[in-house]
Amino acid sequence: MRHSATASPNPPADNLSGFGAGLRDGSTPTAVVLLSVLSEVLACTAFGLVARWGEVFPRWIPFVGGRRVPTRAAVIPAAIGASILTLLFTLLFPVSEIRGTTIRGDVLSADFPSRAGGWETAWFSFCYAPLILWGPLLAVLTVAYWKRRRAAGNVPGAA
Image (cartoon, rainbow, N blue to C red):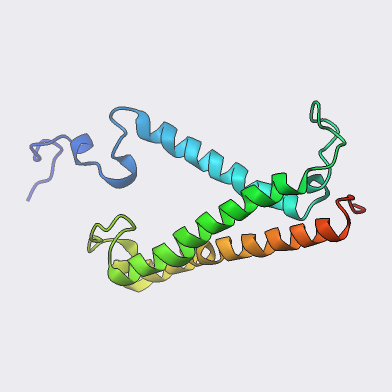
């Protein structure tokens, strides 16, 4: 049997699904990049819960450089983020995997990595396992930051 690009009634671009689904209108790559950058920026702010710049704004930041970071300004967003991550990855994701559905309730396809079996399922589980701990660990960091700042009377500690 001979395979060619003309054998299919639809051009290859019409058969895109998943990551490439929106490539024809140009919206998906921009959305993926923006969501990736946003998630990295938000994830990196967790370092502020353990670093000195989470207690005192760096001097190079205009208007607030050198001033103390208000405890609530760090704790409230971190607590909201920890709650969302815990709900999403620690509760909803494992439950939906057990049920064989997506978080939205759609049935997982047979070729979904966690359903494929073998090395694909093992690799999928290995890569996604840290996400289960992300929310609870962020909650632990948030509580430790709040206790440290409260015990110090909102006075920044030594670097």
